[in-house]
Image (cartoon, rainbow, N blue to C red; front, top):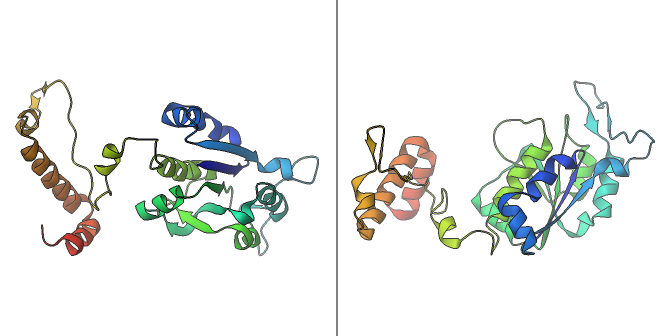
Length: 230
């Protein structure tokens, strides 16, 4: 899978692609990427990409010309193009898996008050929100999408690990423990050192339901509708 990211500050993104699991996926040709600087498509010598909003108000808006030229350069009209903004559709597991099935996705990073709506209307196929809050950096928001998508692509992470994660079955993940068995008087639950796999699986399922009911009652309601009472 290829990820093409358009940004005013591509240096923020570069470190991610050359680090940790992503770097290994790139080295194995499971993933590829290209980072495009929107400023390279500006018209003036100062490479200005923002201007005052029509109608007044605080902040600046990214101009349509450089953003559109950058999108045209990467062939966005023929690709799934994602713009991350607070006004988008909530990002969830289903959408993440949908993105992961694409050969390439283009991700557009906003800044300041956002991007001229005419560019969004013309090029963006998916406007996505990472949560009910605002971050100043479109790059940070884009990295959430990138990380969530690439890790479910085949060949990146062991399938067994993905199957037991939060949201995989509509529930939050169970708690984890490692050595030492006793830490400052707190012991690992006995069942986890019993060697009885069926009992361990039952304990983990119980904890998943318990945690989800406590922290995310909205999820437990959906889970009960899908699987019956628990």
